[in-house]
Image (cartoon, rainbow, N blue to C red):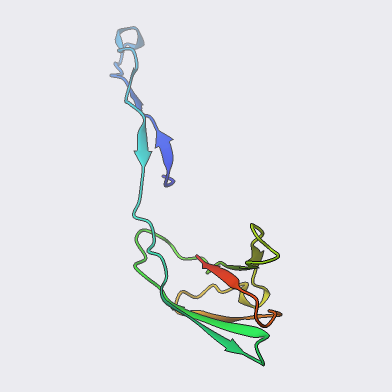
Length: 118
């Protein structure tokens, strides 16, 4: 079963004489839910390379029912990229849960940045 999907069950009593079998009855729809993975914690950001790169580190939180596939890291310049999130190029393909840091380069000194880690 897939998480966050609704399922419904139908059931009937089937007899050796098909003409005597009951009609189907249907269950109410049931939503399959799971425990979400926790938000990464202890996030740190360190400015490097003459203020043109940022190293981001974090710790994973509780996995919940999540089967980990990869970290997703996006960033944006708060001044000129309002609303536009960009995948961090050096942070792609981070498919080990215990690898919890990467480098965002190409930032401009004195600008303000925001980072998403998922």
